[in-house]
Length: 550
Image (spheres, rainbow, N blue to C red):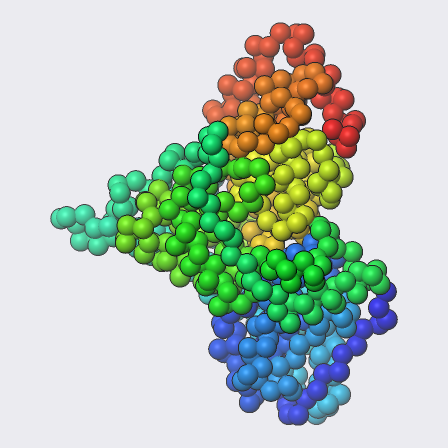
């Protein structure tokens, strides 16, 4: 372990305000409020962000590299005594102790000066916000949280919309934001409003966006754009290797090696310029087929026609408005069809805004949520990718290697297994939060604990997303390369997903019986013979005891 941490903060003048920039706030909102001649900036690489929960090599490297690139840009206009950056090698445990050290150093440098005011854009993780709140309250520091201008919803808008709604649904908030922004809206002759109706006459083209690739597989998939390993990222990797060797950190996933990164390149954009290149690549080469195949999967094909902009969006290297407008411009130029563009816009303007609103409305409820009473531990293959279930091996190994999986791999492969198997919601939440490069608490917690695991009982979605192995067979070729048969729910060759699907239905009669969307599945279970039900339950019991050898 590192010794008690310390950092030599240097000051050459009193400071009026201190702006704390967090790792998911790499834009100019806070910087534009500060004056380099009067104020100071602080950025902290803290150990807790890689320890609680355990972070992956990909995720930690991405955040630290992007933060350092952003800080290097700021140093062009901010002096050394005004731009304070603490690297992870100094061993700062958390934000509270980092701030404590800064203000103690300041008091020693200027004992007769009042403490600077502390400003920060609203954190994307309520636990970080609470930590900083605690520090400020305990030390008499004036703290101002700034509303996050990165999002399209106005401050308080979602809470006002939510009030009085028993079951909020994304579709209606999405329509509200479409009307508010005018995105993909058109005028109607004889009406005053210039943006009263959706382009194409429909709000939602989801039914057109569920195609599989078929037996021939995906065609003309563009090569993924990679970035050369630069000095900043190389330094981060070297530091992490050293900290892992010293057992200061224990990172998950496939360890990064400098020689591999030098030869192959780096997957994720680390600067705004790189993020714009990834956005350009998506709009120009992938968007046209994104709509049709956004739910499809294929063996050893992690990227397909997906955008890879989520990490840049969530770190604020890209603004959601420019991303949406780039997609809409492609539609207006007849370079991408409406179903693709609307589906992409819905992910950002609809789901992303909706999920953030839900997080800040229900954030105190999700950690205790376990509506389905899931009590099993996360199987070990989530940390190794070693399982004979090919769909799980594909999806998990991809995350361990790249820090990425698209929404169907998350919801209907790893998430589906966790739901059917009955993994404790907190454990699967920590796996997603720690291993995915685009995971920030505000977006990950509602998606995992709410939508994926239905642990909240219906805040995010109206039903649990359950399916048998037949769904994975339909949407991918994973089953073709698997030893298990998705059509068999019982026996040694039975697909574990199919077995656990029927066992889940049998276990949750009270949830499914009479449900308008799931009642049929319960009736299908009832229609099975006693012998079939016994065989499925018997196989399920075996799986629960032997999942790590399946």
